[in-house]
Image 1 (tube, rainbow, N blue to C red):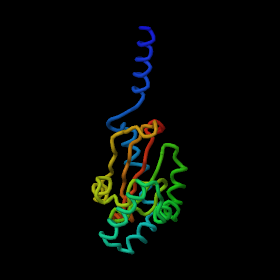
Image 2: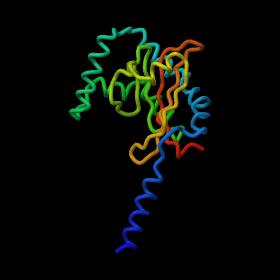
Image 3: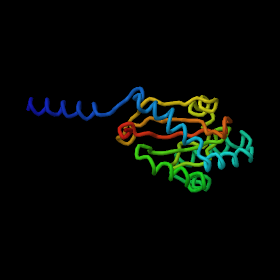
Image 4: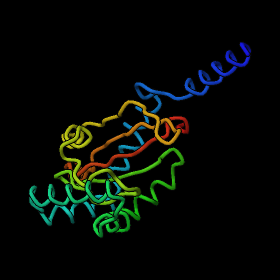
Length: 182
């Protein structure tokens, strides 16, 4: 019986030990500042972000959509806007970019106010403008989150500015499976 308990404890330690938490490895930081930052300059993405920016939706309207989005998500419902953000031209381009890199688990893009423009998977909310991944990145930084375990994968979120030349027009957040980064 004692041998079984020791074996079970070792098995649990091995399983838990395989999950990574903490700062992203340097290879992810390098990737973020290189190839992933370049994704934020994709012409189709930039065009779609600029189109949404031109609509100039007010912050109160954005927050109202955000509240509806969060409530629908909690209720297991999908609003028409959710489906639009996952099937529009921007989302289609994001899916193409994602397919080119097996370490990318998701991508979503925001406009200049932090509202979602396009996405490859459902986000928890519509408005990212109150989060560091928008606030720090829209000012020109690249942000690499700590690694967290999500669905058994070690994921770091990398956020980069969406750039039109030297002008920031939005942000892009990319889920990176750190174990698949070369």
